[in-house]
Image (cartoon, rainbow, N blue to C red; front, side, top):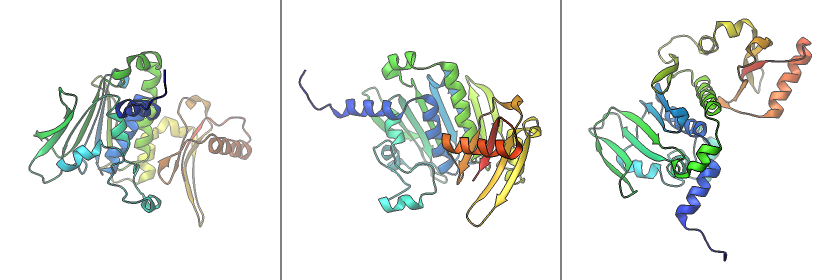
Length: 288
């Protein structure tokens, strides 16, 4: 076969499978969008471990009609205007690529209404395989529904995933977003069964008390709380040295964003091993 240039549709699908590698990653992108929209209540519905459907409902700022088409276009974003703006970004996302790529690996539907707007709107894939927008009666906020995820590449879906493991990853992503947004109420359902719920938005307690609610009393019994401040940084959170809770993942948040770095995790473990003279550190939840 001679060398030839691939068509745009094929390029997009190949690019998407490099970037969108799992339902848990898709959920992360949707939850970050909902948090950026300043929603105080976020509902997550997962069906068949995230492969049949992922639906995220929020009551945030909403998306106006003209922006619905742009939301699934490549490099379309409301977060920055120029490259220089990246240094000032305070939101989770800014590239404007996630929905564009996600729409190429599933059937995407967005229903949205801006507060105080007369009409809501729905973006969906019609029978001609084109995205269209129509008027739609709905509450303010946004509903993003993804159906038949990776259905356009069933071999990839059926042979590259352990469904139970993927569900654990979905729960972990959910926990991470909850921990970094303690002013939001979160609800997680799987096959219409409520798995997790966290009421934070209407509570008067500070972050310390809300973290305790998330982690639970049993977890905190095996932990000690740290809180230190200097001129350049503040570090607070919990460190657990009780192996009974070894199934609880460790979390480190830098400027309220979750970071996964093996060197950082190893450094924290090594330091506390030296400090308390133990040979293990089960887990930790630290904010820097």
